[in-house]
Length: 453
Image (cartoon, rainbow, N blue to C red):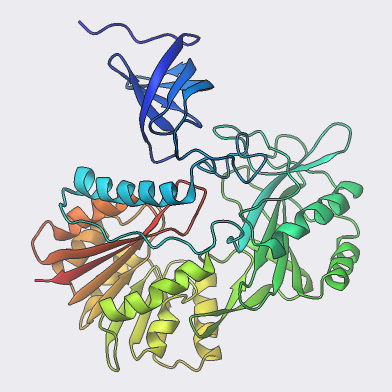
């Protein structure tokens, strides 16, 4: 008979043998799996059980009895409290090895593939790489403004004045903007638990151009003298090209609302990506690590055999981030994207770069993909984190072009989808390339390549 699981409050000594996909240390106590924040493989830790679930225990890390050789002092003083980064205490090289193994294990355990993944493409910059931040805001009872990311597993803001994973050109804006917002009389309420008001501060940077965009996300537009403050910011930072106000009156986890107003300057910044000019708005999806995303373009051109006349479908194309460089390499591209605003930007970006071989449609991928694939030579997939629907997988399996590239930020959904795509035997998985877009976090990007049999 199995021994009863320890109750909350129980003290345990646990040997950590791995990390889960959230960066928590994983060990065992008797027949129970134990997850421990801040613990690393090879360590023995003293913990207290805080929560007992059906299949695992969540425990609080009290002390480390045996240290991992891969442990280091985190580069951020808030690393043990802020939930923005989960593995800053792990050496950069060990982070890369763990992420590579995470992709490998997902392919084997979830997808049933024995293919060995390629060595991970590590980021050249382990800090200062993020070109975007959306920072929750709150005001305390004494009027102090707090800005920071949430503590892991909570909605409690960890107040900060800087963030070392942000590009320094963004990082330097946090403290002065916080001070200006604190000195205003505007209500601040990230979770809409009171009267509403300011919710988030969004910062965006053109990595190559240096252009900056500031967006305040608020539940309402009643922010007296906002144009005056915006004008002062524009004068203070010459590289700032616009200040926007986004209205999000709904109490939800969706950060941006549907309506964005331009307070000063323009509502987009210009970025140079893989030789193309891109207009990027405040609420536009764009990869947060510009340099790592650019490294994928030559791989895509080679894997999809792009040359003059290649007919390529780019599903979930966004603003044309990859569509444009592939068109510049010779492909005739049809981009499919559900978000009308992104499609509008994609068309403007194609026109700006003189790429007449790009066509973009505002449509649901699942309903339009079969027709789009008729006569296509290649398919690029870059879906949201939840991956592909069974319907999309079935359409691709039935109408597979010669080559398919699947870019994913979630190893679990990637492995699941690849198994569905290959189930009928029309497609074969030929390679998977992990890429570290997100150093200091548990996230990893992967590029999978399939060929038609």
